[in-house]
Length: 296
Image (cartoon, rainbow, N blue to C red; front, side, top):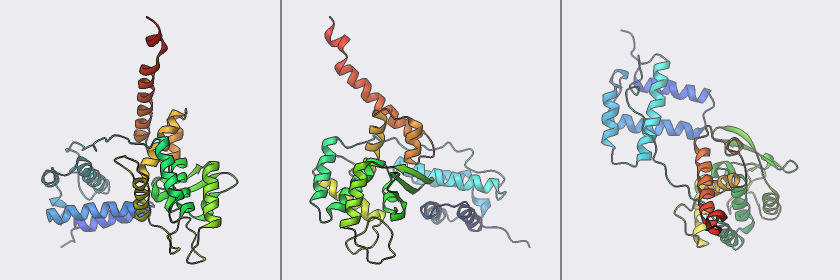
């Protein structure tokens, strides 16, 4: 009797294909963790049991979760099922008949100029003032994701050109940085950065001279913001990314350039910054329009 491919075997083929395409470890973890959760809950082993009803029932069982979490489950299963269809493992993706779940749009929060001055003041009084100042300044100046900044190596800095080689979620890209970032990075690297090993090339290091992790750096930025007394709901490094993006649009930057700088695969998120900047302009016009305020 011919061997029948199990769902797990087909999924491992999917993972191997993703690895061949150059998927990052975080992407592989995303698919594995979500599919493992799905299989544990449903007990599905056979591809024949992968039906619309089974998937819909599983999503309904999790209906009390946050909308963004449900949208993540939906997106993961949709990608896997569509791949199974293309490769001939199933005649049709069971997700075809299921409407897409879209993540809930949350308000974009940014830092004010006063917030940034308070945060940088706190950096200058921290245990590692040059490192913290360089990290905050770089995030604000470039809009890098925290993982991209922490993954940066000394050889990625183009001092003369004023550019960074960034290995991002959507692939490598070149990001410019300004004189403030250059000065902060140079001060940190020349006067404070001490690596545990001469082979360590990562820019941002811990007190023991080891490379910082993304998780560690995220918590550290939150800690700096809170210690600075800045009152925002989302105090993490992504708020610096939002601040960079919004200020770029306010200063006259275009959406396509911003998309390239941020490493977005689509214009969807970039359009939100444009919309927010347009809203700011309309609000400012309502407050200061001279024709309305001066003329009777």
